[in-house]
Length: 239
Image (cartoon, rainbow, N blue to C red; front, top):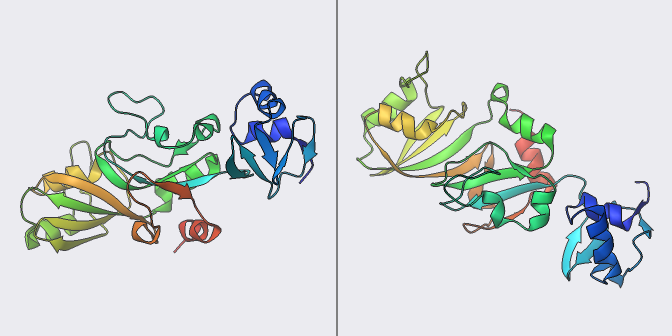
């Protein structure tokens, strides 16, 4: 990559305006490859650049791809109405980078949530044309019956939908738990489908997106990390 002044590099990574980044550098808050840099005009090759801001280590990333094990009580919106925004769980520079959730989970739904500042990635992962399956584990108010499973697989009629909506798969996981795989991603879909089938969703968690499993990511609720290249390949793979 072409060498770039340090203030521009920091700005691209979400550490503030150009002036704010220059101030950080001149005030001695930035190190590059372990060395203090106080002149913002100093140029570096951004690719693979290791730097620290306020003693926190970062690596230059042209785009960021994040995964969060979302806890309950957070809205997947930059302008939340009743609950904190999910972005408050991330460092401030992620908001400066205009990181966005890939799709949404209800405020009381937990589990895997992807976020990125790459518009093409967000579109590709969100597009209904891609039919990216998403797996949910629902806790139900009433016992899970064979009829409930059969109805979800056959399709249930939802208000404002012309045709019945069916689950890709539905498997009983306990007396009050059912694993449901969907492709459509409609508003409150799992909750609405369970209600249409005569039950009620008491709790809901997204456990997988495509073949990427939350259980394999080693994240406690509320924790996040950058996706690896291997994980991105899993998400981007078309079956």
